[in-house]
Length: 333
Length: 151
Image (tube, rainbow over all chains, first blue to last red):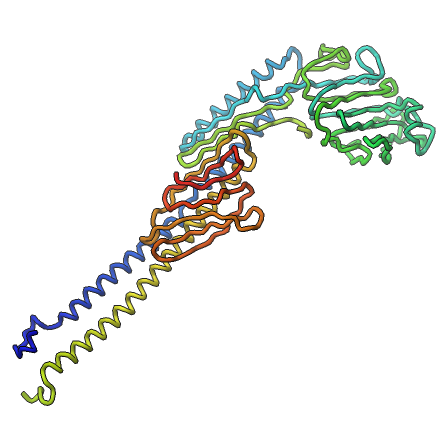
């Protein structure tokens, strides 16, 4: 050591410790700068859009595709002549393809690849069975007991408008099941292999009212639902799937949406009712009870009961494929 | 020399050196502690941001996957930073024990910081760990669940 040897100190020998301390401090300041830089980067990351933003676009596209297909179904299933299941499918495929191409061009601007197409093998053909002009609710040959729809696994629409004056006027104010069957009251039965709902529709003895009562699978008769029909020519409109009469809730109508499997609709005493109806089921075959010539009541015509579509959406960070989107036009898919 | 009276040169040197060393080490300890504290804060803040983004993207993938089945596909790639404030980290997804609720835990390797974020998903999520970087959130159709893995 210089000082221990009593050698005179020079300016060069001084402040080594200060120098070391300064260097150490400088290193700490550099580290602090790096940390601050990391904080700034984090703030930058925090302010970026998450990849989730694309998911909203996917959901929007999926919703639009379903809505478009639904509109196409309604348009293609409009009553018309010379329609076949094949021609309806071809039309839906072509128009869906046009829509898909248009949206693909739009999405390409955002670096997204999109498409929607009809999955023909999974789509379901169906039949609309209608009586458009008022007549008895008998089959094409005039038989009062018949089944307009058999072995359908789903029904999307079932509405009926009938006149009060042609219904049976029951003699009891609170009829039993036996009373209703004995008096040949008009009824509609909807059943699957395990459950059966028989819906009786009759003119109440008090007059001016149409009443509906249902025999449930247990064999008991439910409470009546009564609707005012003030004149003899008054009609009531019954929506069996929505359980409404003239637009109002009718508790007597059962919730039939839990009927699964092969469903059959049967009309009994159709000669004791007069009116029109429309029934859409996912059965694609006609039989002798209905006419195949459109306009000759009652008649059946082909419809596309349910369209199944493939939806694809891809961006550099997100891939979405939903190959099984079922679109149907009714309340009972 | 008059100013050197009573104090020998060695003693004077030792005193001076000691005082400077004491001051310098005090400065190091204070500044070092401050920098370390700031770094921990930076890591914690960074992990919170990464965790929130991951939670958002997992929820987005869940939203897309809810109505899917069979052969359908959802895949979301998230570019998370490989390091946060110079420290690598691991993300772990675990079930929180409550229905549809999961916990995303981000653990810093160096700074010892742990951040937890709640994730809500109606689609079950496979419990897994993945290091920061490019991460894929994928819907496994055969098992009807989401999976977080390296992209």
